[in-house]
Amino acid sequence: MIELTNAQFKVMEFIFNHMDSTGTPPTIREIASYFQWKSIGSAQDVIAALRKKGLLLSNVPGKSRQIVPTKDVTEFFYSYQNNPKPFSLNFSVNKNKSLKLKNHSPQVLPGFEDLLRVPLVGSVSAGLPREAIENAGEFIPFPSDTRISQKNNKLFALQIDGYSMINAGLLPNDIVLVESNSNANDNDIVIASIYNSDSTVKRYAKKDSNLYNKNIKFILNYSHKEKPPAILIPENPNFIPLAFGIHEDDKILGIVRSLYRRSII
Image 1: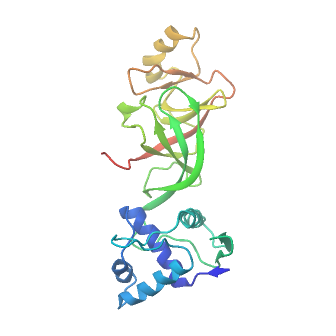
Image 2: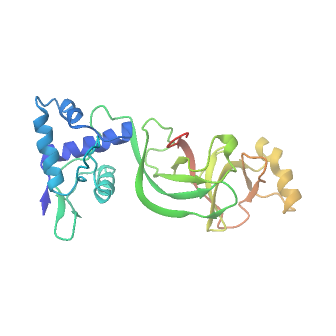
Image 3: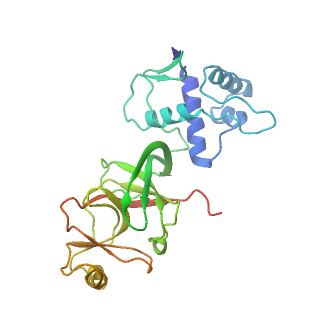
């Protein structure tokens, strides 16, 4: 059984907060400076102990910023820090050892309060609807002041796959923050499930709204004789709107609240 001291746990929190905020792991000197330790030796001792316990990757000669948690520990800590209550938990570091966190209250450290970690659960089609891919394991940082209609609503992230929403600024491989909410307003960008399996990201238009009336001609001319309860509108003229609410299984899974782009290159 591996147990972390309070100092070791706080350093692990700092490592993850720093990586979320800057995209890179901290240096020994940055760790010592943040905790106001007089000598970097104190930080070196903690890092050495964390490596010995199997929580950090080994050093690679000639490379900087090598204070990097292992993949399994990263997933575990992000799940732990997103839990609002202190708890005891065992986590398997390897076949012979487990990590025990006891009576530590998960928190974002001072200076990193503007981060909101959200699980990336898969991808969603920005094109023709297709079955959503659920593959939770990575967490994406978003600003904590993101507009959320209800504080208790579940948040999740999805990666955009396709080109139907490019005029709304959603590009392939972009990641969107989604608020789990089945009640969409007219003009919201939503994640919708069609026929109980296919999912897509589109702009939502309620029946007889101005947005609906401007786009319903494409639905009626293409495949439907009667007006559907709502339509899902792409932000790309190469795609047509989709009828929504015709089938009992059609439902809104969530509302897009924010966008995260890893790189513009």
